[in-house]
Length: 124
Image (cartoon, rainbow, N blue to C red):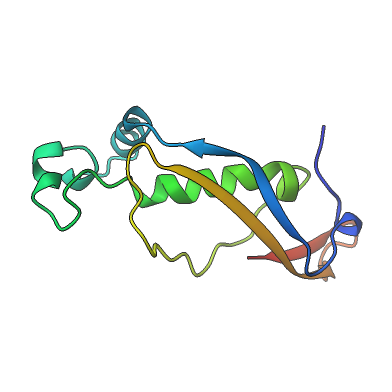
């Protein structure tokens, strides 16, 4: 099993997660329907063509989920839990056929105050 322990991380390190992932129409449709998102912008080409985007926009939570997934090998494969997510900004639309890449910077490290056998890393 791969992954890193607390002592393997260093503040300021940036991990460029590989490989990237191209989102297909099937990925977007299946994720959108599986999560019961009823916004037609994500699965109705006719509806989406009449919006400011002119085409289907990939479900933002799929984009987020893929970015988190891409980070696992480098950041959290040995983690017990991801404690929180904050400041998730969707700054540009993602479309079917786009390829996503992700990177993570280590912001801070510390020993856990409640569990002596683990630590907490804060990433961006």
